[in-house]
Length: 298
Picture 1 (cartoon, rainbow, N blue to C red):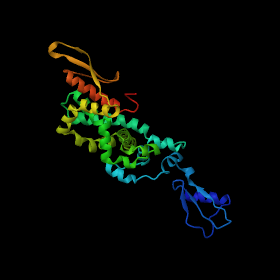
Picture 2: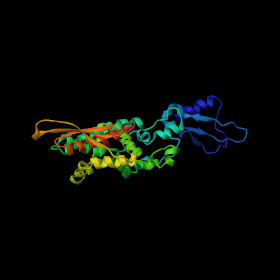
Picture 3: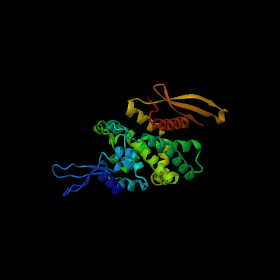
Picture 4: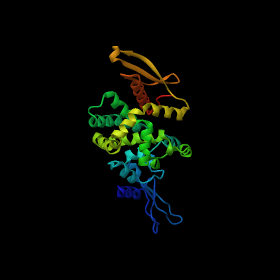
C-alpha cells in the first residue's frame, strides 16, 4: 500500500527530496512527511485513506499505556484490539475531543451489562445446581453491582488505561466506582464482541469463580441490605426504606412481597417466605438496578 501511494504522489509531481531527513510519522503512523532542503516543497503520503479513519481519529491521538499489559491481566488476547481500545474511552474524553467519529465505551458497556448477566448467571447455575432461584438472583446481583465491579476493576488496574476528559481527570475519575464499574462492563462487552460467548464465559470463569466459595457466598447473600445502605449513604447521605406491599398464601406458607424505596422511588422488589428474605431480595435487585447507567435516584 505504501508503494502504491508513493507512485501516486510521484505522478502528481512530488518526490522525496535529495538529502531528506528521516521520515516523520504522523496521523497515527499512517502517513509520512519528508523534511526537505530550503526551497523544496514537502509532500505527504496519506495512506490513512485506505484505513479506518474513525478508528485512527478516535484512538491514536492520546498516549495510552500498553494494552498488552491489560490483556495479560484480563487473561485474554484480542484478535482486534480496537475493541479493547474503545472499551477504555470514557464519554468525557470523547466529548472533549469533539472530533467526528470519536467513539466512547457506552455502547460496549450496555452490551457488557447483558453479557455479565448471562455468563455470571450461567456460571452460578452450573456451580450451585441446588440453590434456589431467589438466592441465585441475589448472589448474581451482588457479584455484578457497581461496588463489586469497581473492586474487580481496581484489581485489574483498569483505571490506569482509561482515556478521560480533563474534567474527570481533575476530579479523580480513575478512582470513581461508577466509572470503573462501567469500564469493567465495557471490557466484558469488548471480549464478547471480539471472541463470542466462549471468550466471555472464560473471562467470567477466571475472574468471578474465586468469589463463589462458601465464605463469599454467605457474605454476599447476607449483605445486600448493608451494601445498599452504604451505597445510598455514600451518594446521598440518606438510607432506603422497606415497604411490605402484601402477602399471599395460608398462614403456614405465606409469601411476602416487599419493595425498597428511596425518596418515594421504588428501587427494587423482592418476594420470599419471610419478610427479612424478601427485603434482602429487594435490596439485591436495587443494587443491580442502580448499577445500570441512568437508572435509579434520578
